[in-house]
Length: 289
Image (cartoon, rainbow, N blue to C red):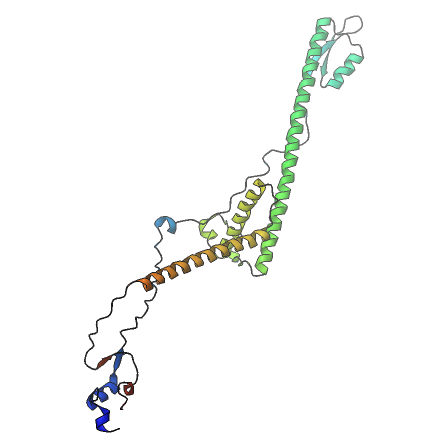
């Protein structure tokens, strides 16, 4: 191309060398998107820091009635005086039971007078009444005790079943194992309840107890510990999904607010050696190069 058609160069040869060595191009039309600000985790309050994990409820004792043992009648005995047919030779006889009293009456014993007979009859009636009352109280206590022992046995069988199911979940890797150091420890201790393996099992047991109380109130059968494990995991996953969805929505909302805002046109104050415009090769500046 001739010098006449080439025209006046945009930059000199000296400037060209300077550009090729360390040129920086600034595009005023492009605005770099701001990085979304990470939400700083709010510091925990002293109450939250000292918050103790939920603990397993100490089960109420099942057997609260003392074993009455075998029925032993109390002593309600009384004494009467009997005479021979002539009303002489009085002899004191001790009556220990209703059977003895009835046997004495069958012999047509002579009590000396009708008033003595009536007095002895009142004592025999009182004995019979007291013995019947005592026997009824014993039968009631015995029945309650037997019933509570049966419930205690059922509870122990249930506990053994829960322990077996938890061991199964651990063996399958669905629950973390408990360190041998804490297996026989008191899991109601807040520090022990926080330990890995212990915490997960405590959370599961608390959920199991709480949900079964609600199910009984609704007239439903209790769930097994394995069923409780899967329901708890589903609830935890659902909660995590909701929190993630909420966080994503808030991030989109924040990003939309930044895009919708008015961005001022940047003022170019490029120093010497800085070309303002869209980046490209130096040949793009002049077709004559």
